[in-house]
Image (tube, rainbow, N blue to C red; front, side, top):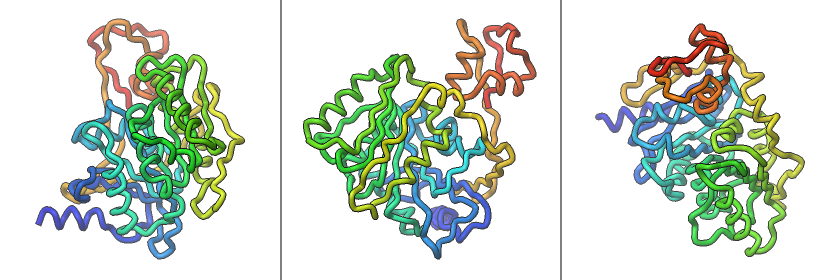
Length: 320
């Protein structure tokens, strides 16, 4: 009975409003995942692209709420328009390309989509997952973005067949930029790398690249590519800049409404849950803002404080 309920919740009909569905125990040999359906999704048309977001190590586990902390789903929550069906699986540890594909196959079977436009993006561990996934299925992925990651696949030659944007900061202390350098070197050894864009961003650290998920240009670039394009050329008229990262949270639709359906009970739940952080020694508002992918101004507004106020160790402050 429980499995039937989960299936029915994750198999909702055509939606007339944006929905975010928590799907658990739906895909054999897959992952639990969030599924976003835009308000104009029409199963009869099957014209929506698919974006797969792969999270980093800090969001691993078996609590789907963690996947809402940053990334494509959080960008939607904050009001970034992404005109696509978005899949955000949760891995308990390392990403398995086959399990990610099983989730995609399940979704595309239950929710007709444009299979010529399936995209994947991720950072850190999700960057590894992205590159390993593309290497395994270069004929399925229309374009991909991998940030501050690397790859574990035995062969990376398949990456050369896909419009691919790799972004890594030279000041990354969590995952060295050398990890992306090695991926690019492997691609070069395979031959033609004309579909590759590699932004090696000077002075940019690990957490700063999370802001890429909140930029219009990120999704605009992905959506320019399709498997229906026989040449599969990459649009190279783009580059990631520090100024773009700085403005990532601007121009968001603050009035955007998103209904959540949880497969555990089928009840709609509020999406904007409150999240708190306990101040530690050495913390500043700027540091806390960067680590929680927000801004100092938003922190001040949430906590009714000023930028000049002193932070006391042990104080709990709201971060979202």
